[in-house]
Amino acid sequence: MTRVLVINSGSSSLKLQILDTAVEEELAWALVERIGEPTGILTVRRTALSGQSAEEHTEEAAFPDHTAALSRVLELAAELQVHPTDLGVEAIGHRVVHGGPDFHQPVQVTPEVEADIEKLELLAPLHNPANLRGIRVARDLLPGLPHVAVFDTGFFHTLPAAAHTYAIDRETAHRWDLRRYGFHGTSHEYVSRRTADVLGRPYDELNQIVLHLGNGASASAIAAGRAVDTSMGLTPLEGLVMGTRPGDVDPGLIIHLIRDRGMSPEDVSTLLNRKSGLEGLSGARDFRALLEGVDDDDTDAVLTYDVVIHRLRRYIGGYWAVLGNVDAITFTAGVGENVARLRADSLATLGQWGVEIDHDANENGSGERLISTPDSRVKVLVVPTDEELAIARACDEVLGLGPHA
Picture 1 (cartoon, helix red, strand yellow):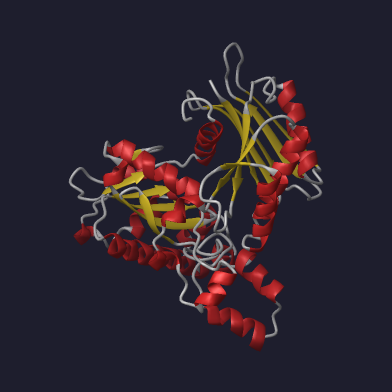
Picture 2: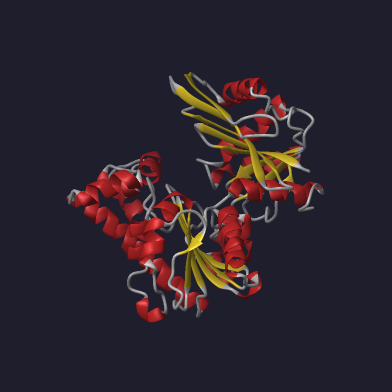
């Protein structure tokens, strides 16, 4: 039995989960939102354990920083008897968004690793600082436990040079490590492996397209178990349309805004990271709100939805050409798992390519399942992602613990 605390630290949020990797079950879960704002929201949940019922506690309070947030989580966890010490946690796993050119595999965190993660903040200024903050706060409040960093970019280290190389001056690219790294790799790897399990096929024999669609969205092409293309690049801005990010734009647009329209680099960064995508086009970053607007024939919402579907179709078709043959297409993450309309519309033009959707399974099912017809040459699936479990498994492997060592 190995129990691992998994921490996903965002700029204004902290998500925690304690997992028993031997049976792959959640023991406790916590989420703190709006850290640094006047009022935050904290939820701690205890899963039903032997001799104890499930219990959940939610409160609103000010959490000025991540230290205050984690301190309060640990206090409540102790009251619910699910403090990491109570549950015998042996390791702490951390999601780190950008691993740069050097971190291809999960690693145990050392002072040297911390320093290297800090250097990568230039490549992921919205993510790596928050990830590192979570590592340091957890280390201070839970001393004596080993920490493991698991990198979103790691799975895409296998991208061939033709896929990861930007067509810019090679000396400049080499000097500053400018290449396509890809993100959401932990999710893409987990989901692609589960897809093989569901289909009862060897992982290294399948050609897959995985669509991770949430507030952040990315696509990947996986040939015989190796990632060969992905939609995100040097940063998580490239690719599909997202909640507040535009995905692909002409780089000349950025030059034009700065040089000709007087916007500062900071203003353009805010525009592209926080004021684009669904929110920039329709004013609604939540996909449910967007669909309400589509149903009401709101012009902006309809256009936004059409842009999302058009971009998805471009990537699916492009990856099909890269792979040559596709065995499975899998949808995951909040939007991918829950929006049947988007799944059907994004694949609607692929009938002649061997994609046939079972509309009843697509619209009425839930959880992990096939949504293609028995006659569909290409299998289409919904597979809920579980990045926390993947991170916990990685801790086992790195530290030589439990069933995944």
